[in-house]
Length: 276
Ligand code: SAM
Image (cartoon, rainbow, N blue to C red; front, top):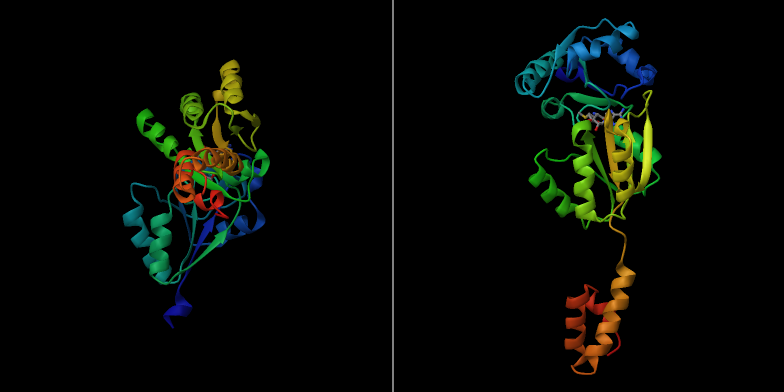
């Protein structure tokens, strides 16, 4: 009985720039629901007005999400269908909504996505970097020391790295990436996607630093910064490991030589010391 009366939470993606990117199902859902929980009601008003959506809005942002989530869950328990939107793209992706979704699920309320734009995925789809595996890092810490520490932790990551970045930090961030990952790492700076001044710069990190320094416009707007993962240098390590093993093998028992060669070069010990 309660099951039948329960409402539903629709997590609806909105455009990341081009307002035409609101799909038919998103429009229909936003028109039909009893209430739209929006990150910033003033920000969403023009989008909703464009599609003739007059559903009542309630603000749900990081400062009130805890309390508001309880109220919204109570409404859905009473049968209301509610939509969650953020300022741009997919809610919960570097945006509020996690607490509401968790509370709704905990209360046994169905939560359904109405998928659409997401800046990280849009950027990945045009970057030309390996996309079979990737790591979404969201925003780096704003303090320089914390940012550098985080980048150092990511230096060995072999999957493509995806970051969100704001305009006033993009240059510092690129400089720190050169220091942490090396100047030759492939990278892509995807700026203002789906908007009038969309640009997608690619090259290695050093090239991107130079291109942004040469054109101040490249520092304006919204960015997704993608960096290729650490190249798979397994083959180079193995070759070096075998060379060192061969040298040590003349002086030491094979097991000991393999252990040392592996420790020195980072090659897998088993791959060096196979047949002896
Ligand atoms: N929920 C959103 C999504 O699905 O992409 C992201 C919200 S997050 C607060 C905003 C950040 O996303 C911006 O600072 C920027 O890094 C990135 N972003 C959003 N729109 C973008 C666009 N049109 N082009 C490039 N990056 C964008």
